[in-house]
Length: 293
Image (cartoon, one colour):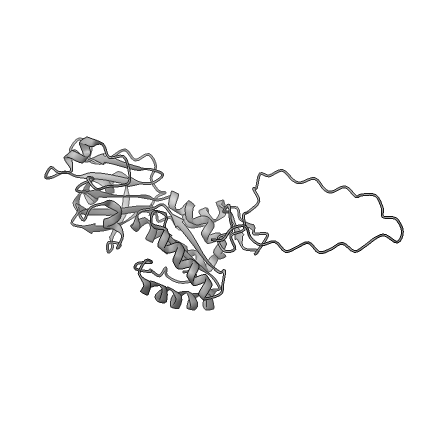
């Protein structure tokens, strides 16, 4: 929610979540005039219904949603980054920078087993080794999910891109291997600090295991968020006026004109009307947005 620390809705599918969300959304609308709901793209149905019902019951289009394809801990971090940035940027800009913040993270988990991992391409041999005692896997989730079997020769997979220095890490342990994270992954990422946090409620389901150590690494540089905001070019939505860089306005749903679209030629004036036949032009009908969030 904008203008405050990001508030959590425990389970959007729970009927009681609607009442909790309505109370929080009403307060946020009165305080800041807008609400941005960040939710996992891989569990979107409940969030879509929640936002639609809230918009209808509160009679407002100032509640938007932003789906992100991130693991639970990384998703929680981006929500907090947006809440931190909210006092300094319009809500449409916040929605626009959310995917860029997600791209700058390095997120994943240590798993004892990948036998029930639904995301990523775990090989048959990795599935079989999941049943052996002492097995461990490093699973990263970025543009695509990758699975690496941890061995003594290669305890950490190759890291092609790491966050800007100084690198900070959040870690949530649930019967996993925090020693691996501290002794192997932290040096590989050159992280200066690891902070332990509570495990998100959706983590076990996302990773397909009750034994995991989830992590997310991000830049602690004071200008990193500022750089992201400056690199995203927003224009005002022609329908509601909200600044956005997304294909469709997150609030009114209006599709935005492409930035690279060629300019339309100006209309050429027609022949002058004959005397006594000119009429005032009729006002064009008001159009409605083609889509809704």
